[in-house]
Image (cartoon, rainbow, N blue to C red; front, side):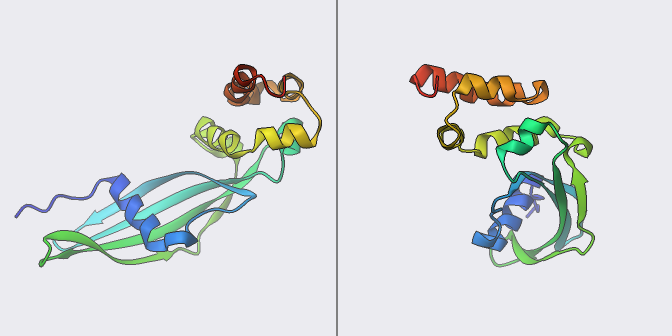
Amino acid sequence: MTKTIPTDDQLIGELIDSFGNLWECEPPMHDCFREVVSKEVSEDKILAVIEQTTINLDGVEELLTGEDLAGAIWTYVLEMRWDKTSEDWKWHYNDTQPDDRQILLSEVVEIDLCLEVIFDEVDWYDYLEANEMMSAELMAKLPEKYRKFYEPHHKQFLLDGECV
């Protein structure tokens, strides 16, 4: 039988599954994206190094200031072994690497992807209500570089007739 090598997405999925509920980021961290940075394949073993980029957002006020957000790149090693019985690759081992590093949003290659994740995870309705603010006011206060990420939420408020 030909051993089909798992895709990067499958390897990332195996890593996430191996951590279970411990994988989830909690505020102020936002899990922006994950990528396989290396993959060594032998006859019965796959060793993959996977990086997870997270960005921290303590509050919307950080977005309003326009300052560079901080985060981290977490490095993991995933080992898969060929299982002759099932004729499939199976999770064998995973570990974190001690070379996790701090990063600024401006240093991330996929800045737009990170900002989309962050803006999608913020409870904008709660923020606007707590600050007795209208969506248009927030849009005006956001630095230009962030407006396009808030705009879909603003349009939804307009459609729903809320916070306008």
